[in-house]
Image (cartoon, rainbow, N blue to C red; front, side, top):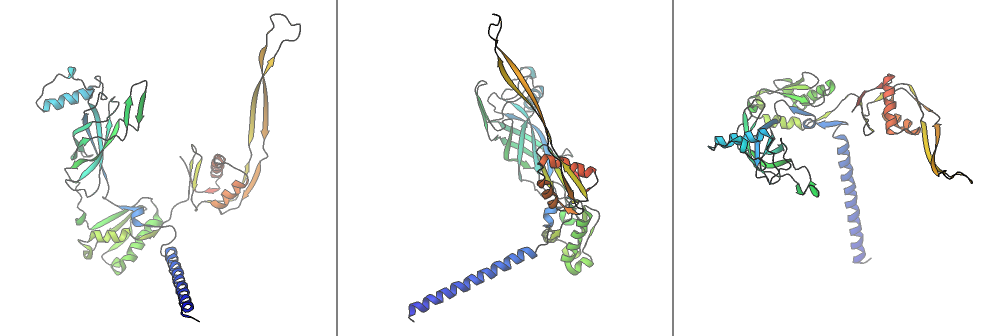
Length: 391
C-alpha cells in the first residue's frame, strides 16, 4: 500500500465523520424546533398589548398651494374663506369675493402619534383633498396644526406633497396614474407636545389580549408566574382579571427596570385556546374553518336542478307560387330542458373533524358556494358545534 492510497482513505474517513456530525446537528436542531415551543403557541407580544401603550390619531385642516390650475374651484366657499383668513392674519386684507383659488386646495391632514414619541420627533402625514380639486401634484402644504381628540396641538405639518403618480393630457386624451387627490409627506410633521404617560412610575401593568378567552388569559398568567420563579409567589405576581386582561404587579426588585421586565414577558410562549369558528365570505366563496370545529350525527343530501332555455333562429322562406308580397322572415325556435341530478346522501358521524367533513363533501362534488349553503343548513339543524360568521 503506497502513501497515496493511505491519504485517500483518510480523506474519505474525514468526509464520512463530517457528514455524520452534520446529520446529528440537523437532528438536534429539528428536535429543538419541534419540542421547544408547544403546539398552537405564540409569543406574548404577538397576542397581547400593554394598556396605555398605543398609537394616537391626529388630524388637522390646512391649505395646499402651488397647484397648476388643479385646485378648488371658485365656488368652494370654505377654501376661499380659509385663504382670505390666512392672508388677513398675515396683514393682507383682501375681499373674499375676488379671490381665485384654482392654485389652492383645502385638505385634511392626518397622522399617527406612536407611544413614547418625544418632542422634536418627525412623523409621516397623509394629505387628502376636501373640495373639488382635481390633483395635488406639485403642491406644498402650509403650516398646519395637528390636534388630538382632546383638541390639544401635538404636532405641526408642512412640506411638499408626493402623490406617487401623475395626471396629464386634456379631457379627450387624459392619462392618470394612482390617486391624484391624496398624497403623503414623509417626515412632514414635527412633534411639539408629548402624550402624558408616566411609564416608569407605574406599579402595575395590565396585559390586554387581542382575542378574548378565559383559558388563554389563565394560561398567560401561569406562564408569567412560572417564568418569574420564586418571586411570583411574593410581591411580583400576575393574575387574570377577566377574559381579556391579565394584571401584573411590579415588585421593588423591578422598580426602574420595567422595560427589562416587560421585555422578558413579551418573549414568553403561551399555548392559545380559542372557540371554534367557521368564517364564510359569500361574495368570493371563501370558507375558513379551524381544527376545533366538530359536527354531530347528520345526513346531508345534495342535488342540483338545472333549467336550460335555448333559442335558435331559423329562416322561413315563402313557398313556391306564393303571393308577390310574401317575405323571407327569421323565426325564433325556443327549447326548454330541465335536468335534475340524483341527490347524493352522505352520513357524517358525531365528533367528525372539519377535515373529514371536507373530504366527505368533496366526494359528492360540492362547490364552495354549495358548501356555504350546506354549512348554514347544518348550523340551522344544530349539528355544527361552532360559531358561523358570514362576511
